[in-house]
Length: 122
Image 1: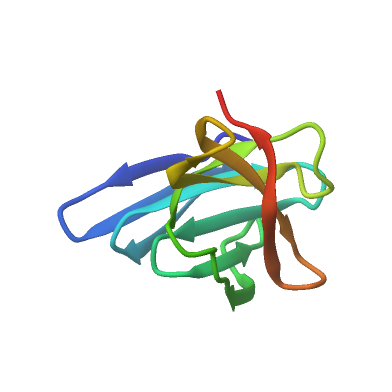
Image 2: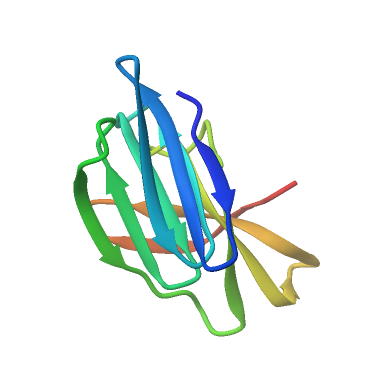
């Protein structure tokens, strides 16, 4: 499923089509969103430190706070073929970690956490 993200001045709109119907949700600030084929959920996260899981009809399944290491900032969500969720969080490290700025961090739904750097993001 294709998820569209439209960033406005103060909000971000996340939209997709489910069962022929357009679903649209608005979030404060800038967020990123990806569809998890492995779990059939839309994963939404932003720099506010909250991850949201929505069902394909737009209902909120879960929301939880996450913490990143010091000197790290949320950058974007990205598809992944190696994570259980099928979606990873890309985090910017400053200073660089092992010579790279952007790293993929796995989202652990059961533990409700974001793990450490797993793979470089390119």
